[in-house]
View 1 (cartoon, helix red, strand yellow):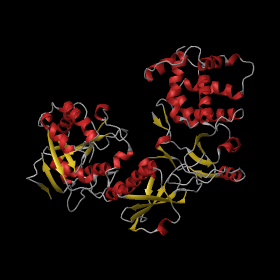
View 2 (tube, one colour; view 1 turned 180 degrees about the vertical axis):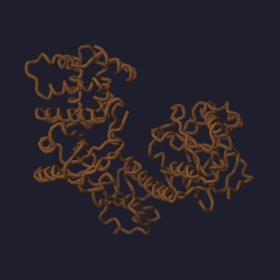
View 3 (cartoon, chains in turn blue, orange; view 1 turned 120 degrees about the horizontal axis):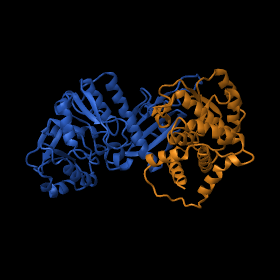
Length: 323
Length: 250
């Protein structure tokens, strides 16, 4: 959503780098962008050599990562699908690589190696039938974080094996700020203020006040320091993903009043606000991710996924209804 | 490369205290844990602290250290290092159960973990000894200067051609911006003359031997990275490697 400035850089390059692959299709989902994406695609459509399918939905008011990907994957016509964020470069020969891998190996999905530091962590490829079988990205995972890990876990639960790539050619992405990552999401656009109350040096309460005067709060634990005893134990590495967590049953939601933050301080620095939104988004998503993981879920989105109305290639007379 | 904490039995604790108390604390640690039996890092996450590691720590030793900490002065600052969490109270001791991946130290595959731990113990001992002559750890720039000093001294007994070869092979080509008469080159030459000086401090002699032994088993960049990690200037390790490479080309 609203990433035309990235797509202008990546799409021409991605087409050029993969034009040799016969049956390739780039699906562009315009998630109600207001930055001129539709005009740009329409003006340049002839140059895309028939390899681009453009879909637009006019319903979303903010960016929903899982839902938008589900829509795009459902609209894809191929039997192998791969998520490519607007800031991601496919890399020269990436489509050939995927085709060969799926031809040579049964029951796999393909993802970048976990240790890669570029912004390509979500470049996950699977068969469309597997994707539909697990009912897509979990739409209960809102905002940034863990949707990719969750998808991979559930594909594994389905009996698929993860194949990974670490070729730097396939790991290129445009670098951008943390703010760009979340600026179209619900929490960022509806945020009034964030309050922090230090309960101890390993436990803090975050309260997020929205513009409609509702709030959401949770107690965050830093497990590095949450064991204040001096019992001697052998040290083990702690991955960042496991370090912080939301205390069980500590999430509260409701109508805001000043008493809720009587002992808290308000976050004033913009940089801290952005990082806190990112941080909280990941922690709350992690709760859902862990729930799916512990319950060994394969399928999610019981009612529907990627649903909505879209229009293909600027034709507004024939809406496509994704039920 | 292997991770130090993945398959090891190291135990550890953190002592949160202002930097001005570290010299006294490190002296106490040498008495309590025995010299050459532990290694440490400087750290500032959630407040200034020392992370101390040893293959074996006894509860009584921790009690001794804890009882000492209460007598140390507390700093005036209340500014938290983290926007969401409060600093850990000063002059307190905490166990280390987990180590973040960001400081999970790596070492070369050909080195046994106990060999690397011995090197870190010796390096720690050298740093503590050096502290008797300097308060270098208070400011970052002083720690960088001290790291340069250790690195240049490590070259005294080393095979410089071999190190030069390693650095040329592993570092990308960079312009040599150190001219023949720069203070850094002069400093390097002075350090190379160090053995002919009449009076050499003990920590220097120890370091020459520790570094020489280590460089017989491990690459030079591991030595530099270990020093920088210990002194909490890990981000400067690449620059110090480039500096060494440039200096060695004269």
